[in-house]
Amino acid sequence: MTGTLFLQTLVDGLILGGIFSLSAVGFSLIFGVLGVVNLSHGIFVLLGAYLGLALKEAWGIDPLMAIPLVFGALFVLGGLVQITLVSGAVRRGSLMSSLLITFGVSLMLRDLIILVFGPDVQSLSSSWLFDTFRIGGVIVDGARASGLIASLLSLGLLSYVLYRSKVGRAMRATAQQDFAAGLCGIDVKKIYAMTFGVSAGFAGVSGIIVGLINPFTPFDDTHWTLNAFVTVVLGGVGSPVGALLGGLMLGGISTFSSQYVGSLYPNVFIFGALLLMLIVRPNGLLGNAYKGSV
Amino acid sequence: MRGFHKPISSRQWGLSALLLVGAVALPFVASPFELRLAQQILLFGGLAVAWNLLGGFTTYWSFGHAAFFGLGAFAAGLLGQQLGPEVPVALRLVLGLLFAMAVTLAAAVAVALPVLRLRGIYFAIAMLAFAQILGEVSKTFDVFQGAIGFTLPILKVPGLAKVQLFYFLFLVFLMVCIGLFVVMRRSRLGVGLTCIGQDEDTAAMLGVPTERYKLTAFVISAVLTAVGGVLYSYSLGFMTADTVFRIDISLNLILYSMVGGIGTVAGPIIGAAIMILLTQVVLGDLLDLHMLVTGAVLVAMVTLAPKGLIGLVRDMRRRREETTVEEGAAS
Image (cartoon, rainbow over all chains, first blue to last red; front, side, top):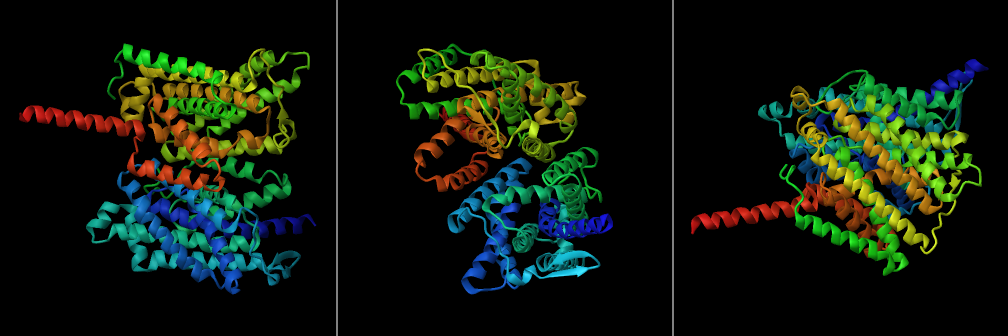
């Protein structure tokens, strides 16, 4: 029985980790390419969930089918936020001011969400999501299974774009050295805006998956921003593989500590791991020291 | 860094004395609502000045000062529970303050040793995480009863209403914070910290004891914040993890400093006054819009006036002086 419990905990941890990875990958991208800690990341995740809710209630679109629409909407929003607000802070070269600007953006967006949808708990769940599968004693329900599949597909797609396409190459070049990238004919401003857009888009997609699995409120954004930060610090900045690794570790820490220590402890363990990593190895396990790392 | 060692002019002394007289007289003329606003401005203005002891001189911007605010309050609350009912309230408050200061001193040193090795964003986020952990721990372990909280006894002084009493306590707190800030800015410590803020590696190379200076500023700032937490909790009459370990307290301290002007004495207090009046009076009936306005002010300040209102005024004055000089040269 303890073997099955261990296996179940492991599977739950991996599934949760997949979602953490997806929700953090955009944060990691911005951190790597622009060197900005985007404190509005969590609110982008929530915006995805709320957009999915609006589409479901207005036209009955299934949340999973709404993923491309949500991605598109948040891509545009993220790009706009970068062009209008964040670019000024980046140009002045002050990382602190970008921290404050993105925090201000998150406050405004959170207030708008409350004004439109109200402060109550919402959820995206549909009935088919509760069908469960049993694989060798381990139980997985539809929501978690589809969440994991969607996470892995999105991460794979992002890896493909980053490592095989022209835009991806330009992004990686800008991450390494924006000045030299500009000399090589890359439109750095455009790449910055694209990066923010892609990041916000992925955050929105992860928001839909989060909404399928858990109920959400407008006040969860700090939670998702911090999770993304922890994931990036655990895994390493600026790559989908780092985000995947960090997310899986975070998911593992979270489920194992709540299963074997107590359901109230995961956050204590998560932040403990964060502090430890910051002190021991602030560039993450994969140690990608882009400009975000001091 | 103009005027570091310039003596305080008699005009500045006069203005300060006038402000102090006005502040002491206020509780006898203002309505309870106005007094409560003034209380908040004094307390959070003082906390913002305390935050500036480290964040104002250097780029070590703590995003988790609520950790010390809460730590102090919980230390005083736990001690109060241990004391018998025969101990008078005033003594309880004093003992609570001393205990909170001692606990925070130890905790701040323990946290600072690893965390102050981090720089910039990493320091900011590590402090944010530290505050989150403390909040969670206080709720998770029953000993600290963070979820239920403590009820604190009511402090009574004959002849003064509760609002007036805490107004004066907060006023004293603000004066202490201002005093420490002014003394520190004029001391070797303050100059050293300013050097650290400009270029830490160069400062270390030139013989500034960077580690010791950072630690000192961090600990003083933390202990003052803990005192603020104790006073705040006594003014409320109760406390739980949710009243003291609030992420918005951490961030408001930065916002107030940002609005007024980081690294100045008056800036954080002006910032606190503007933001508290804006949210509590101008938008008093529009609770829904508080966050929106706060966010908009933050974004606008960072984009348009990164040195705060004081910086803006100074820049304008300097520009005017320059134009007068040019005109004088031309004629």
